[in-house]
Length: 97
Image (cartoon, rainbow, N blue to C red; front, side, top):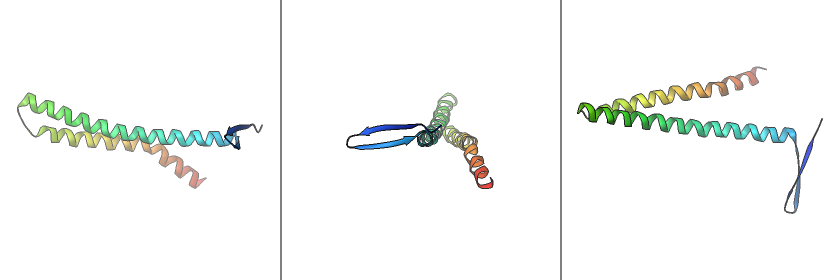
């Protein structure tokens, strides 16, 4: 079953197959996942610093924000590792198969 879609782009007519559309959707999913990874890193680091600053204000210290920063970075990199492992395993499966 080979379905075709005809779109009119001004003077140019383009013919898309279902496989072309599915491939484009796969690229968009991957791009959106990577954008999500960027937001995840930023939020982890910001929350770590904010929590550290909050602890600094409660305990009357001035260095806990650095501990929060380090903790946020650690959590961010661990989360990114967990999020990107499916991409690495898919790539290895394609290379081996």
